[in-house]
Image (cartoon, rainbow, N blue to C red):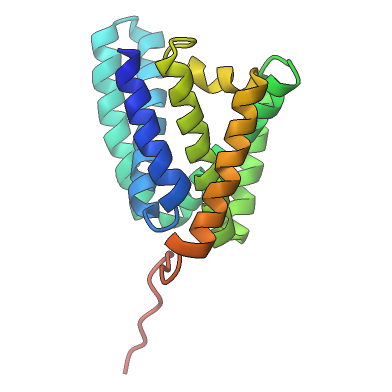
Length: 196
């Protein structure tokens, strides 16, 4: 089963890392689905203790949040920035050998979300490049069987070579997006229409 997660992680990671700005609305929907599914499934599992209910709630929650993430562009930009804040804080904690503190993780995510709103194109490119590279490197961990599911994300930070691979891929993704794949693409709310 971890090979399926690894393939999905690698595919989404490559798309986000190198084509993140161009495919932003698609990636936004995917991230919205992942966040909604994880949140709704976790809450349902804690309340009911039933895997089937958690799975169904996760699917419904994922679809719900994915739909809103694309419809509410600014919320989506905030989510992308927040995701980057989460990933960077997780990587830094793991690299320093510290336990992940949920309050610090949440604070960093919220702060990064607000920064994303101020510098949208740059943040979208940097966030998708580094979030995507994190997924690619996590896929390697999953393929090797060194971690399962979401634990692969934190496993990357604890290994020097994988951490450096994440950084190298992230910077490569930023360069490719700025130089090639984001050219001629504009995102954001539609411009206001003027009445005659």
